[in-house]
Image 1 (cartoon, rainbow over the protein chains, first blue to last red):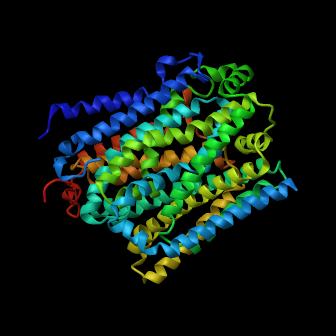
Image 2 (cartoon, rainbow over the protein chains, first blue to last red):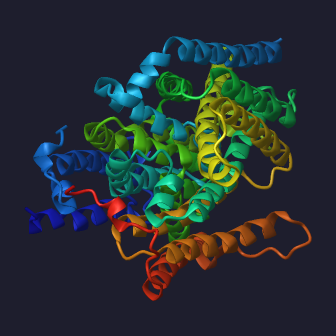
Length: 76
Length: 493
């Protein structure tokens, strides 16, 4: 069954891709704990991506949208 | 003495890697087959690292640190975004779908899949031809990187062409001796080795200069603009178009695209996908920061040399610096090798077989090997002209591949796509881009601009064109009788 909640992944992925570049910190030159602060943003963001990617995989949303049975496929 | 030691270590390591590849191939023949058939247990690691191996190239080890050294550490953001996030998303959008289709029909190459769907040998050959075309500058990039690395390591005693020639010889030897399938897990071993070594190198250098804070402080003191995000070459246009063209380009890379077909189960694809951003960051962070920190270090980078070996030569013992360079060259060699192998399967399956006719297996293997040797040698000759920086040459190759991506996505997801739409959508942007690229390397032709105001890449516009043409032409043409949209269905029977 397709669910509208599955489609929420589309804006989620869009935000993940767009803000992997620390646009709000454009021109900021603060150094925090040894690295420019925008590098920390990026490092944290990729960590967030990995976590949400794992979540997406477990949700079975992609299989449902493709018309496949998520339970017939393997989980993580 | 020092130069002799460095060279000895580099050549010794390359020979060692060759021997390992050879033994691995001979010993693991059945295991490799097993991997292609069923073995889920090694699937994730091998898929993850053979994909990762594409990153273990001159583009990452030498080009990236060079750019960070010249223009600032923002390159980490560009590469992290495109590879860690955008490519990962495409991995699902293109890779998983391709895997499902390939699982049903047993496709091995992208051209084969599209050719079968649209009932067109011409399209199949076109896609393979385009892929081989852009593989050329990427192989060339490895040779350039190796040449520059040895100049840096030996302080110019070994000339540029010597390093490039060395890696070419080993590339050909690797393919001809280690053969068709044995490379995948030597990629894995080399990937783990390089990942560890880059971290050891970073820790070593950073502790020698007094810690991360001191390294960043010296960097910002020497080049204040390095500390702030953006500026210089890093315009929004550059960041966005580089990230998009490279990420889409990577998915159409023969050896990456082929991995989408060979994953043993969907679990493998899923696990690799979730681990990907972290793995990417682990490699890029130390490699690119070393390049950026180097501006604050008292090192002299000779003209035409790579910054990473110079920094290592300054702060780490000679044997370690040589080991890193050797490891990087070996990793580059083994990933070039997978590229050449995938390329040769494109050539034999999609160009030679349909156009010349099916030959015996022996003859085909022979054609593939000679093809690889000729291809690598021509790339070596072209690398001697050094038509651009490592990043420029790499970016050209990625952009060329990227122009394939949107028509392929269109074919995967839109049943109404027609053969004519595909042919036009692939051929026209390719022809235009080829013209742009050639005009910059042929001296007597006026150079067409490769970027427009604010660093926007022409290839990005051509990607849009490829999508518009594929959709537009498909709408005004009717599907041919030979085409079969149901070939790409993944649900039902």
